Length: 162
Image 1 (cartoon, rainbow, N blue to C red):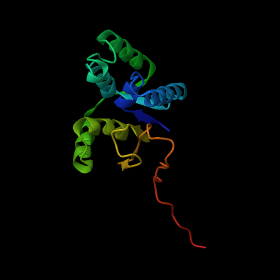
Image 2 (image 1 turned 90 degrees about the vertical axis):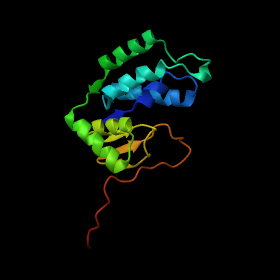
Image 3 (image 1 turned 30 degrees about the vertical axis):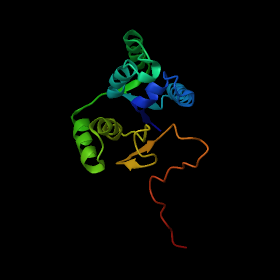
């Protein structure tokens, strides 16, 4: 199963403010790198650099990473992962996503990358967990394990006559 990783998963890997999410993001990315099941969108790498270099009040005005560190990590992402880039089809699909699902522009683009490239799941905390957007199912990898979060079936089972 091929899955697309949203920016928040990449950022949590380097965010010590939430050790649980940091651990989950790290494990998810390590496993996905080993089995080659995960893909990254060009947009997520760009957003990653912007987010981790932004000063945070909760860190006393410091950023999660310096610009040099962030760019080094961005280069590593480009080297290690299959990166998907926008195309005309992605942009028109994103526009449809804004209209049909009322997604904000950048979320619509991430979803459209997964939709156009035929990926099964989008790993993100920014979408409704378990919901299908077109053919792509959104999965929040940071939900607490203590609750039941079973995803709905992709298709309803068919009944057979006896």
